[in-house]
Length: 287
Length: 168
View 1: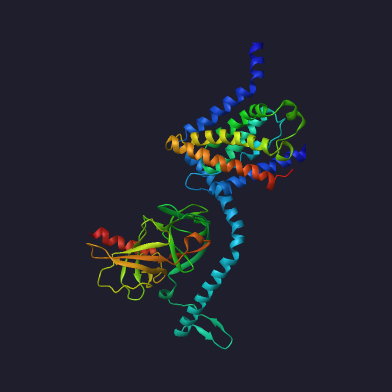
View 2 (view 1 turned 180 degrees about the horizontal axis):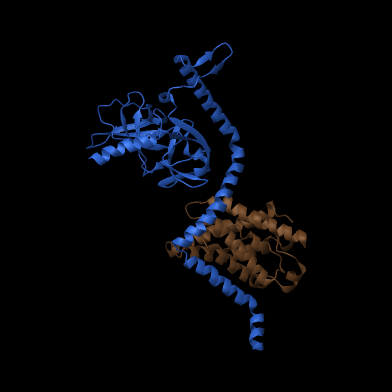
């Protein structure tokens, strides 16, 4: 017995090592779905927060660029707002001192349909077939699935999953997602998808031959998907050809948003989305 | 003693953060990812008790595992080099050197010694790491390719770090 203890003491490091190694290797081997969930969750809590902190830090270097972009966007919006206010008689516009005081519509039908909010991108990829984006806001901040994601008024993607503090977005650069889009100049619409080849180009399909198409035409959202307001820029037509044995054009669209450079994104919520979905469901059930 | 403790705690935190926030995001040519964090094990003093070395390696590995969602993979690889480190040191340097010098550094041990020491540790660690990871993944040759190319980058980064940050 004494000898046994002496042996154990003499080789205690080896015993300790073997024991710990068995323990860790069994962690690897028994790595099943349940453990993944538990581990993943705690990992998500810790790493999600760390990744967020880090993106806050790395954002410092991008402030200048982000500021410029936001300022430009503000300028565009301000111009649009002024034009609208001048056009409608409801707003009071004091041209003399450049302060405008839009009157809030009393009629319920006049209420804004879309609610906008912003979030920060904490994880993003463009190099896979199915790209997703992670945002630093979740259920607690009022983010819901099916909210549209935009950057500088350009379409980026659609919120798919929401956790308490984070949300994931299916990007246009995901070959599983399609969105309806139209040519701004003539309102003909088709369906937009990505072929997974070039992260700057997407394809506009189902556009029939008789439609006049030009290089440089702007492609915008239709509003049919009800996640996005109508008329948000998606990109410009960079190339088009007539596919052999097909009734539709092959149209290449150069994306307006730079997906390698997303920092702050806007989220759009259609407050009537639920109502629209319910109504459309009736049609499906009726058939 | 307290200063030493603080210093190694700092090295631990810095190695983990650099690994998790920067090096884990690196993927060169679809195969090369550096594993820089073992710097912590590399730099521990020569007279670290062997069982303490094991526990520190385990904690380091598990910390990395939590951030990469790979329970046990980094822990078992780190544990292995924690176990082998005294033996490797005994092989490449004499007992007198190990007793007269406090910790493995380029400044005290020389570039050639340090580089070979790091290379041995890195290769063993990466071999284990990639093959334990490959438990569930693809073939032998591609794993070997990942091991060798990533080892080169990790070793270079660890040696370079001696000249950049950890001067003391």
